[in-house]
Image (cartoon, rainbow, N blue to C red):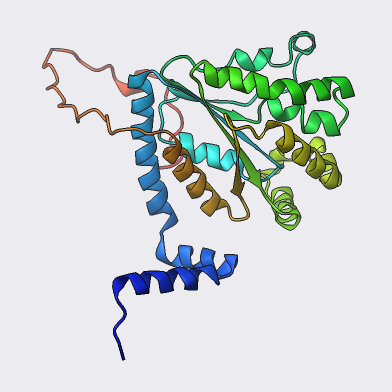
Length: 285
């Protein structure tokens, strides 16, 4: 039997992978790749990216959108875990105040845009108007239509000004969202994540789906396209989105070299007795 060369083997592997179901591909990933090990590797790269952004004076904006319980918060947490909060910060705005409701719609978001050397991650953004505000009738129809037409121009303006704008939509199925909602309801540490608004949005699944499709039709522009994240499996989604974000911004390793700790000055300082200070109870010893 003729021995296959390397190219033939590679082509054969590609054909074999192409017939795998999505579930089988994920099982393969789980067997061959340690989540924690890969996350650590990617977080090291994020630190390198952060230093590149700081030294080169870049301005980076990343939007995280998607359905409730789609995994946006978990992805943001893993991205920022090892980063300097003075360089990479998270913006998660609440309900607008009465004064903000009278402003130009984008005004309160503009106030949080990055200066040079900063990254800003929006946990939900100005796209609230195309989603929850529209579906729940928190804005008028003319305001909604105006947003669909003005949003692409607003984002083109940001990009022309030098801002790197990245938009992620976390996609999750009806069944998986239901499973995560049930999990939150039975976990007291996660129950705060559920609100009456979340439950109402759950009831209006189809309306939100149509609103998302309409939003994409108007705002999936060349200068700032939508990147869809398959969020059915949280861990894989986190790794995929971090890896993709790193691929969008060319960077080099500018990590500072390790510092040499200077010796402590020997003085006649006497530390005050611990019993003279107010100590917290040492419950865990």
